[in-house]
Amino acid sequence: MTTHGFTDPRVCGVDEAGRGPLAGPVCAAAVILDPARPIVGLTDSKKLSPLQRDRLQRQIKEQALSWSVAWAQVDEIDTLNILHATMLAMRRAVESLSVRPLLARIDGNRAPALPCEAQTLIGGDLLDPAISAASILAKTARDALMCDLHQQWPQFRFDVHKGYPTALHLKLLAEHGPCEIHRRSFGPVRRLLPPR
Image (tube, helix red, strand yellow):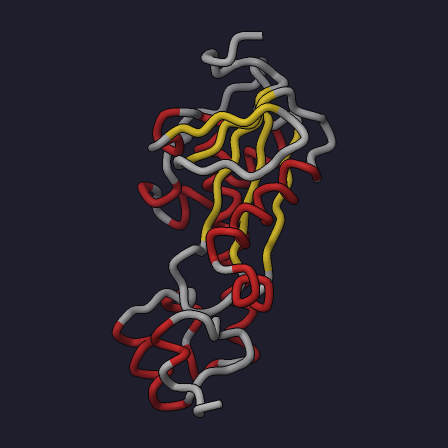
């Protein structure tokens, strides 16, 4: 096995979505691509339009050898902190793959404890097609969840900002106060909580 080639069928790419938002869980995805079925157009999910991401996530799910999406919930984020919760979601994603990888390539500079070898790659969502695929699955899964959560809490417009600290979200948060999916360990939310 070469750890530098991108076509080894036992190498999974891992990425996350949702570290920065003030609300909602953090999502991680792991993908093992099929070298015999390359997917054209894979890149960092943030460089794609919602339509492009949606098309590619369907293709990834159809053509990858294995893929999984996993979560760390708001209470886990508040208990562990966002970094450790992200590592937990990544580990859950890798452990949920139907094909056991020999190596996990992870976007960024921190790797969770995994049942296989791990390798970090800064800017990996641009450099490694499997990490790009994971970034697309994590982003589309989390965006879809936040649109679902908008149905429960329409006053926060989670369908628009997906929980990120935009001017609109901060304004609505100040107006309505935090709801149960806001991350209480994050400063803008914590400051609005009643003193303990």
